[in-house]
Length: 113
Length: 117
Image (tube, rainbow over all chains, first blue to last red; front, side):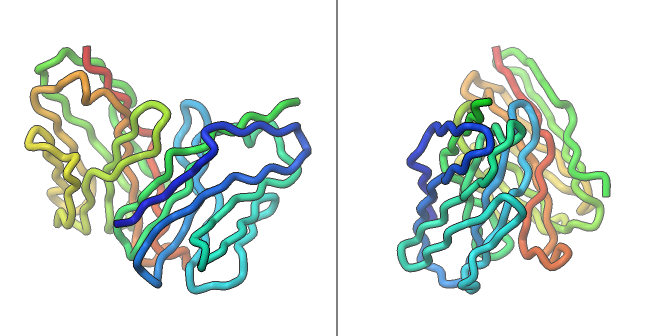
């Protein structure tokens, strides 16, 4: 069975600094996708970044990048130059095929001005 | 592209009543998913459809829950004889096998927050 674990319930960072959110997962499949979703307070879930398991290169989207370690089943999210608008719950998720997403428990990120 | 919409956004009901939620996916998406999210937790999968066919149901989906997607477009999720434990955010998402090259990305609606008193 797929599992996703986020071991940091809460994180905080000073504005303009860099923060890394951790995620580990377990899967028996060789072909899968990993995602980080952001859920701001009282707002809907939006996709931040995605990683295909067959790609060795780490995904990057502007200030967001991942460190994908396939052998270790680790998928961390790095946010550079943190902004107040980055404050949200962040969920790591795994998917195999066009089926269900399996989410971690989430990390609440606070940005200190 | 108007995004995924859900109605209602909030629902307060008394224990034992039936409730029905609606989800309108992105129009060209053929897959539609329902998730449940309790406070402080990640969403949990309930069920999903490809077109009008319901392809998988979670063990979380008890006999009191039923979902339909009769014409392969919008979907409804009904909860009969609601219990206080049903209080949660119910999220809908849609996807297509290929969405602009971003395989299997799911787009979420704003959710329906259910409170059972």
